[in-house]
Each structure stands twice: as structure tokens, then as C-alpha cells.
Image (tube, rainbow, N blue to C red; front, side, top):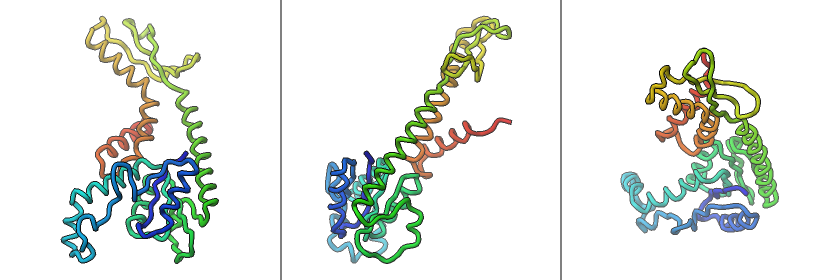
Length: 251
């Protein structure tokens, strides 16, 4: 089942109904009104007169502990989810959330239960529906797509590399041959062991051989992890650079 972030407005009467509907279908759903471990964030928790704030007061309130906790709760859920259901009508926050999730490669579907003003830029998203049945079918298709991707990944992961001790003419003190993990001899790299059996050098080369043998699975892990970070995160640059290096043609 899908992990769903329902983005909408506190004033939208269909938001609670949508959460219940999706949970009844068996999906895991984040409800911003009633998140685990607390209640949903509202500016009135900080100041009952929040609508009269100046810009400076608003900017200062963004760092208030209640605002920080509310943001972290929602943002952590956005990273956790793999689908965003944007329930109309809704405002700036919900559209910002949907845009961020689409930008990180997650699926976004617009759920419009009643007539709304047309919006051209919804073409950026993955689907548009006006009935619960349409929403169910979209999520069903998403689950089927996930299974196809999972099967492809499993096929790729099946072709792992492993290190095999080898004695080759050019390496009298031995070497580790990195090969595809099957019964066919298809070496992809050779890590020679130091002449004379130098202990520290041998240990270093054996570690290098293990790292090379793990390369396909490490690349797969980096690709899976990248969507969970934004370009502002240090981890994003580390993962992106590692993936780019792994996929770069050697000339």
C-alpha cells in the first residue's frame, strides 16, 4: 500500500473524509490535523491575533518552538510519503508541499470534489480526479507501477559482484578478482596483493576489493536515498556526486 501525504486546508471539510477513505483502502496516511505525537499546527497556538502581525512579527514567529515543531512534523511526513494527494480547495501551504514533493520525484494527484477555478499548472502533477473511485484507481495503478520497478530492481540486484582469490601470472603473490556473482567467469576488476605479502598493504587491498565488490549495491542505495534530501542538504551533494562519478564514462 502507498504512503500518502494529504495536503489541504484546515477549512476544507473534505480533508478528514479523504483521510478516512484512504485508510479504509489500506493505505498509510499522514493527517496534518492529527499527526502522531501531537496536534496539528495552527498560528493561533502562538498568538490569537496572528492575522494582525506585521511582516517582522511573522518572520520572527517562524522560529518559535511551536512553529518549528509543526514544520518538522509535516516536512518529515513529506519525506516519508511516496504520494501526495492535494485535496482542493486549499491554499499556499498545501500547494508548496505538493510542489516540493513533485520536485523530489514523488507522485502528486489533484483531488477536486467540487467545481473549482481551472489551473493550468496542475499539468505539472501526475493525475487529476473528482471522485473517490478515480482516486482509488490512480493509487492502484501507482502500486502496480511500484511492483514493476521493484521487480526491475530485484533483477538488477541479482547481478551482484563478489571477490574471488586468484593466482594470476602477472601477480605472483596473489590477487582478488572482482567478478559477477554467478558461475560464469566474467571479471570486472583485479585487485593485486602486494609483492612479498606486506601485511598492511594486503589488508588495505582486501578492503579495497570488498568496496569494489559492493559497488553495484552501494550505487543502488545512493539512488534510492537521493529523493529523500533537498539540494540544501549536505547529504544531497555527497549522494549526487557519488552517483555522477559512478555513471561517468572513463576515457
